[in-house]
Length: 112
Length: 113
Image 1 (tube, rainbow over the protein chains, first blue to last red):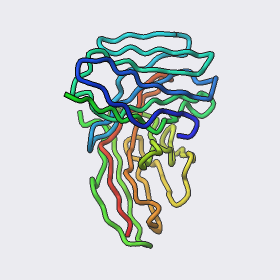
Image 2 (image 1 turned 180 degrees about the vertical axis):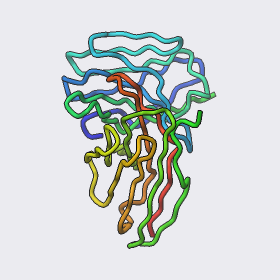
Image 3 (image 1 turned 135 degrees about the vertical axis):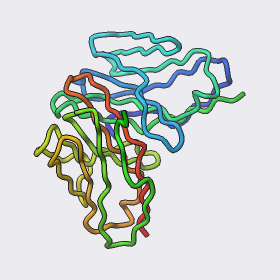
């Protein structure tokens, strides 16, 4: 995961917005993903964005992509305690059979 | 629809022992992969397969072998376990389209003493 970087921890109050940031290095990456991992479980796909888009919205989730800076963010509106989890960003490498390279994950803690 | 099934969920091994982590998917996915998850390091790709009979190395393949004799199964073998292989292992599969998301199993927590 060294080519995809995320901050390790974020704490927000319930009802506030959360913004989780990610930077990647491979400019040829075509798809960028956000996954959520709850304790003791595997990773669950939240959303993904194609590299020719700069924004995607899906209910409380907004993904922003700045391809020039290779920066990806996930905004969660009206954050709930059930959103507490680890969030991973991942990039798809077209030169490697589209395998996914993951960041180290951001642990989101939502305080009541 | 079971998705991706991993067994066992937990395993303790002694250094030098061997074992196989099982992974099966019932979605007819061509692509399957194994990751290990360690604190602060995210998920690192061990091996992957783009179809039956084809396997390739990921970022951290040393100490692990895989085979893909069928589309459904992708076992991961540890021939001689080492404490450095203590980790949580995830199997994942996806469909053929380039934007197909990875579907993950629930993981195998392995401890090597």
